[in-house]
Image 1 (tube, helix red, strand yellow):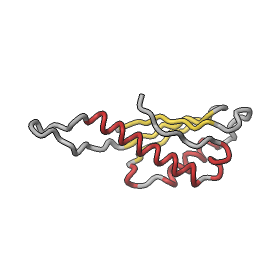
Image 2 (cartoon, one colour):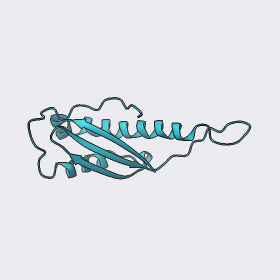
Image 3 (cartoon, one colour):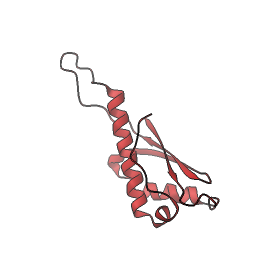
Image 4 (cartoon, helix red, strand yellow):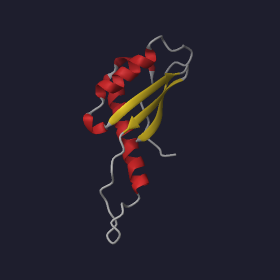
Length: 114
């Protein structure tokens, strides 16, 4: 299982999160998750200046194999890039489709690996 951390920054940091906002964001993400995203679990935590997201994705096996050994070529790196791309795509789809996310949060920025 891969875990991807992401956050969306609020447009207005003066306000506090509304009651039920984390659950609403989680519902938006689940509503736009596709079976190919392989999302297993979503955790959402709202702060005054941002919302933190943890996306738990089923690990995808790498199909590229080194010719002589038969071992996957850099599986951790390939999986990390794939998971980041899947998470970014889900968050972007959700942000575009949700009037609430568009009103309250900045659009997601392209992913960067840590």
